[in-house]
Every structure is written in C-alpha cells, then in structure tokens.
Image 1 (cartoon, rainbow, N blue to C red):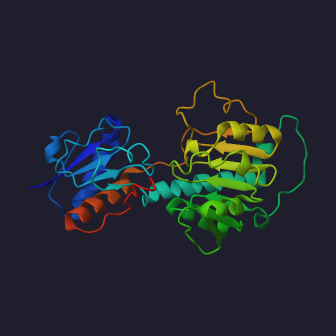
Image 2 (tube, rainbow, N blue to C red; image 1 turned 90 degrees about the horizontal axis):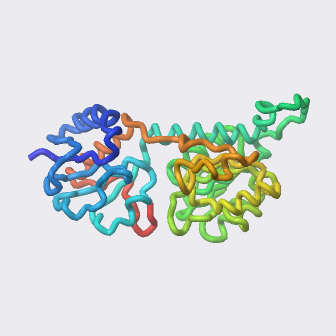
Image 3 (cartoon, rainbow, N blue to C red; image 1 turned 30 degrees about the vertical axis):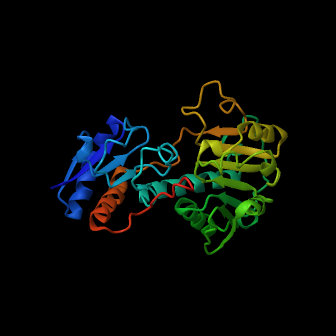
Length: 311
C-alpha cells in the first residue's frame, strides 16, 4: 500500500511544490501517493501550512506526522486535535541563506549609516567614518539554527556578537547567555539587536520599555523574527526619545500591516513586507521527503516541535 502524503496549504502553493515534492519523494524510493485531496482516514503524512483549510485533525486516524512548511508553528502548535508528532522547517538551506542575507545586509546598513547617504536631501557633506565592526556590539535574541547561521556570518565580518536563548546554545566567537538574567547581559550596551525568537507566551513583548533601555543609546533594531516579540508602543516611545535610533521591521502583529499603522510613517522605521526569508520549494521538499522516509523507517524525525516550549 502506498504512503499517502496530503499537501495541505493554500491552493496557489501547489503549483510551486508539486514537482519538487515528487522529485524529492522519488529519491527516497518509497511507494507514495501525493495529493491535495484525500479521504482523511487514508492519510499517513500531512505537508502543512497553518493557513490551510485543515483545522481539525481528528478524522485523520492513520496520521503519523504533520510536517510544517514554515519555521513558525504558533498557528498550529496549540491545536488540541493534533496529537501526532509535529515538525517544523529548520534545515531548509534556502530559508537559512535568505535569513543570513537579510540580517547581514541590514546589520551592515545600520553599522555603516548608509541611510544618511542614500537619502540626503540637504546635500550634507559629513566625512565622519563609521566605527569598525569590532567596535559595534550585536545582540542576537534567539539562537536556534537561523540565529547561529547569522552569527557565523557576523562574526566572520568582525562584529562582537552576543546571543540569548532559552537553551543557551554556544558557538565559537559568540558570547552566549540564557535565562531571565541573561537577556539583560546580552542587550546591555548592544548597538544593534537582531530578533530571531519564536512567538511563544514566554517571548511576547521581550523587547519592551525596560529591555530597550538596556541597549546603547541610538541602537538599531532588526526584527525578521515575529511581530509579537516587540511591545510596539514601547518601541515607538524609544524611537521618539532617541534611545533607539532606527528599527527595521519585517514582521508585525497584524499582516499585511494596516495602512494607518504608525510604523508606516515613522521617520525612524523601515518596514519590509515579511520578505526576510521564505521556505524555498526545492530545498524544503528535500527536508519533507527525508522526514517521510524517516517516519516509514522508524527513525527519529528531524526538527520535532517541543509542544511545551512552543517550537
């Protein structure tokens, strides 16, 4: 009997994923049936995006695992009807490379003060050079696979990098912190802060009036992680006071960002429309196929979600 794999995402994504998924599943040697519709009781695996129509997993009585296409699982991890293993997209090399490029680009942009030269309506001639990267401390909040990849690139460019995470991952060249007190140490005097935390009850509002005040005056915030990580009112107040010099924000509590949101018009905010990185069908399909192969072989699944931690 073939392994039935249901693709449950927005209909427009099927055209992008069908060929890569078939190619990746072919490479496993499994007898499989990949489809966008199937009787629930026949489905073994669901390739899932939380914006799909599938909300109730109860009818999927043969289900072995749900394989999330996104790194974020906040839209599904709390679903009480989902009792089988849930994985998330972590090792998709396209997702990781895209995040490294976004973070590195905007860290360098803020480090070099490029905005002042790109938009200079008064034709000011300011020959003050920026400091060297070694004098620009960067704090990365969230040190999973994406945070570690970004840190490696920034360390290679000479930035002193600190990290903060729940688990306290360590990496050569990075000063690592964890726990409630660790965030204060990571942020203290940081001139650039990068947010790569998941959206969980423990991380919401992690950048607030108290923690923003720990950074160096005029620090830059780069958030390609999750919108709820920031207390929006506190950030705007910090921008207005000069405690924060600029914020580049790619994710928001409501998306698309409403047209009347103050972030659009704030002179110290750059809005990017959730483009920091995205799962690439080719590389993501290889991760999905490998997990199907592992599931059928009785091997541990890759990137299993910790339901208690929320990611």
